[in-house]
Image (cartoon, rainbow, N blue to C red; front, side, top):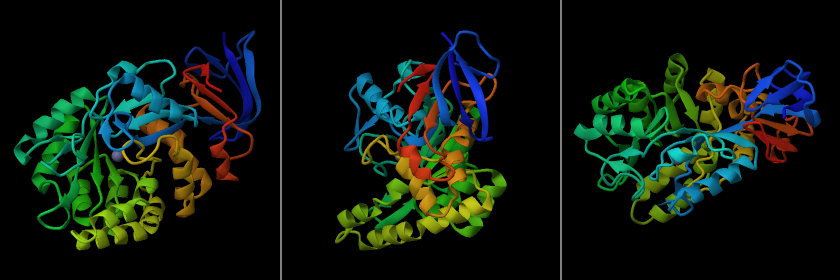
Length: 358
Ligand SMILES: [Zn+2]
């Protein structure tokens, strides 16, 4: 049976009637539809543009599909109805179109340099094998590959790029040739400069960004997924490195402390920013609303944060929102989230793939 929703529909802010027929949205009235929501603010389903369903809390690979389902359900029940998985050690293509599971845009495994990432998570390859590894991981994913652009180099005692500029450029080229977009993990100044110039499609974290590089990203249309929640844990990373790698610890703290102003500068320069929690590993699922509030705290207006978590992110990932023929994913809030963003913590109604979740 068709479903009917009436309310103030974002982004345009008009009071409208929407009908959901199967997994599609229409503005054409459908007879005998069941009204499931009347009033409030109707938003295209939220997106977590950086999380990991294949990594369990504690940074270990998950053990089976049910574990991925459980993690996905935590996000779904918070109104997050599409996920970009930014690297998974456990493949789960079986869930791509499963009812009850948010829409998925998946990278395969992280591609990292040897011993330069979390143990057992990525495929670790030397420079001359990077392009081939990227091609293979593009096939394992759905439209994305994930590169680890920098990590602590224990020999140097600080963050350092994983590979040189030519290797990075070849990696991005291999991703594009395989029909995938390239996302890169980067914390350092040196790493992010190499990766932006290599032509990556999205910078993950990006704590090392300078104003010049921000301008370069805006020119190229390179996206930034800041993962504010992750950056706030840099104090813990620094604490555990102290004594052995003091320079690294100090560096991480400095990157953390300047980051909110970096993110605001990127927003003001026109860099497309998306909401990503980095759930999986050391961060719990279901925190998209917190990530949104941290972006707002950094100075990004509520409506822009909402766009970054909803309609703009859906467009970026290829999951059309509340447009004629769009996908039947929506969240209803009692009050206007553009006025008080905190309402995103309490969705009143959630509909995923045309099915009422709440
Ligand atoms: Zn991540």
